[in-house]
Image (cartoon, rainbow, N blue to C red; front, side, top):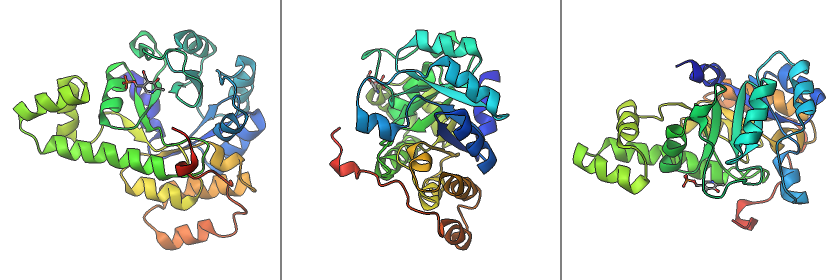
Length: 278
Ligand code: PLP
C-alpha cells in the first residue's frame, strides 16, 4: 500500500517534535528521520494550559523549507478540517494527536478520505486496531506526553504486546469473542495474531527523555520512537538529540549506551506520571 510508505521509511528511526525552523535543523543534523511540527511542545501545553490547536501553516511551511527530511504535523482528534489544511500544504504525515485539545469527543477522523498518511496514538490493542480500521498507517503509544516520565509509554507498549500474545493463544471461536471485547474488526485482529505484531509500523511516544528510555522501548518491540519535550526542554538539545537518535540504532549495546548517556547536561525536569491527573 502506497500510504504506508512514509511509515515504513521511518522504521528504526527517531521523530522529533519541533516548533521552529531552527529546531528542525537541529533535529535533522542530529539524525532525526522526520520532524513533527507543533505550536508548543507538550510540556508547555501541560504547563500553560489553554486550547492546543494545529500550528500556524506558515510556521509549518517554514519548517518544511528548512529541512530535507519528511515533516509531519499534528491535527486535533476528530478535526478533519485541520487535517485537510495540513494535507493542502503538503505535509508528509498527519498525527491525529491527543496532545492537542480533542475537537470531537466521539469520532476520530475518517482517515480513508485522505491521501496523506496518518499516525494515531493508542493505549492498548483495541485502540490501535480501531485507529488502523479508520485508516491510520502508523500507530504510536500515547504515553504521557510532556511529563518526561516514560512509565505510561512502557505500560502501553506492554499492553499491546501482551494482548497480541493473548490473541495468538486463542482458537478462532475465542478470537471472535476477543474481537468483540476489544471492539475491533475480527479480520484485523486475526491478521495481527498471524503476524504477531501490529499490521502497521508502531512507534513509542510520550515521556521519553533519555537514550536509556529509547533503548527500553526499543527492547519492548517498538519500531522507532517519537521524542517531544525530552529534547528541546533539556539543557543541551543538540547533544541529547544526537544521543537519543544513536540510541535507536544501538539499543542492544549497553556499553555504547553508557557512552551516549554521558555528560548530556540536565534532562528535562519532568513530572512523574503518578502526580498527573488523568
Ligand atoms: N482518545 C481520545 C482523546 C478520545 O477523546 C477518545 C474518545 O472518543 C478516545 C481516545 C477513544 O476512542 P476509541 O474508543 O474509538 O478508541
